[in-house]
Image 1 (spheres, rainbow, N blue to C red):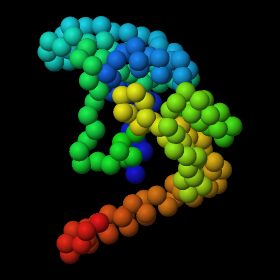
Image 2: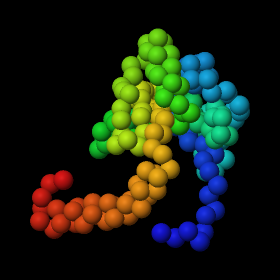
Image 3: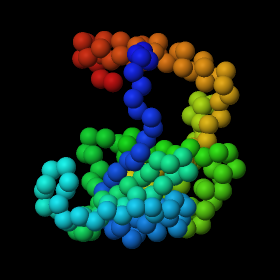
Image 4: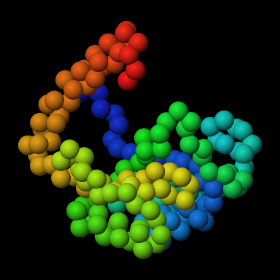
Length: 178
């Protein structure tokens, strides 16, 4: 692992397309409690110059990072990936405690949101899963593992990934499906 260069300080924002800025605002601000902190409204895309009227909305998390959305004014949400199961692509946020996780699950359910979990991930984290109004899968999670367990996970990570890579290469060479 190369640890000499570490220019990335943290996540600023994750951006996704939404079908309605107001519907998205209500979900993220009113239900999840993330404040709307900035709105950018443009007719041309700054990075490409392409004409495409949009509004870009930002919601801030406690750590200073953001989730952001683009409303292109056409009432369309991002399409799911046809080659990827619905459970794969998601964004996960950390909560402070299991009690917070259970309270958020109850709050979401009380507002008619379908919630999966609490799911235990190998004693590492407990999570709940749900979809926002745009079809984006979200996860709320709380870390369970103590510092010693986390060190053990990190120590084994490269070996486990190498074993996976070796197995996939063997399967590819023999034509065996995953």
